[in-house]
Image (tube, rainbow, N blue to C red; front, top):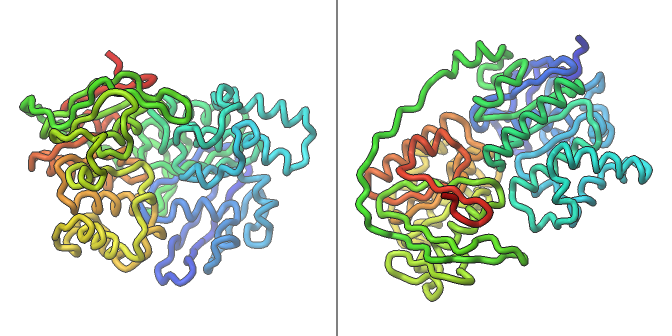
Length: 458
């Protein structure tokens, strides 16, 4: 079968970096193959993806060695414009790819730039929006969409261009489990029925590997059959022991309703969070999970009803006061990172919260020592996530709210997170875990509640 992607002894250094982001990578992918790229955080998965469509090094600068060809074109000597007609890419952060205001215009944007006639554009928009199940969003504004909805719109806009190679960098990181399953099934169908070559970066590959032809492990620099790779990773997480949680309420949500952008996101929600428990909140994208937990530290105030935290009504309690007791880690870790170095990020939190801790010890605990003097936003997604979690924990809060904490992190970082949560629970802290990671919820949660359409499902 024809080789459509060829990577020969590739290495790449970002500007002003001594350590290569990618080094000694050789890989061949045949036309129509479904290949998973797997590796630890910082192993170069995202960089390798960007090498396939010329963004690295043309856009990023830096120094590259070796050779990368796609459909016979050397990425070093062909423009990004030419390569983009062959390689369609969905990045980790959908925000970075949204350029239009309205969903329908977003999907049509690339087709209009390609010069297709209006009837062809309309036909493709209709086809792909139905395939990706975003047809009901066509009249919506991108700014009104949830993270998962935005990711699906980005995917639709890429697939509308009908590329030969589809590169997906953590494409399901913002999708709930049902949407994730639908998405992976769709990608597999495009691969098997239409012959679309798929290159997918995934950390949690348990429910993806069955669709793949091969897995390329960047750490081992080896391409393997799924069965061989499964054997290397086969390891069951230890079962969580049942704990007796006293019925002491630390957070009380009483008949809370909330409107955002003209839509009622929460509808008469009543929920208690018990002191010392780990509560998992699950549900589809757009169900209101993030809206609900943002009420716990006063980032949002209820339109109707009350939220009581440690006896204080959040409606008339300053956010800075609530933040001393309730720490919130958002879905996008970059939202929390604004210092010049990793060390300064931790030091800032300690100073702001009037707390004290051994900064070097914290950074070592989260496997960030080698990045201690680096700019946080230059870290990989998994490294950013670990730094953001570390910054949340150093203030020693009574309640920690983690909103999709395993998004974009590898198995070792996920295990570190789980161990950290277990340690916090053993110290009597309260954890609220918004997650679509069923294995994590089963391992950690004392109780799970599901939101559906802004209400708690029975």
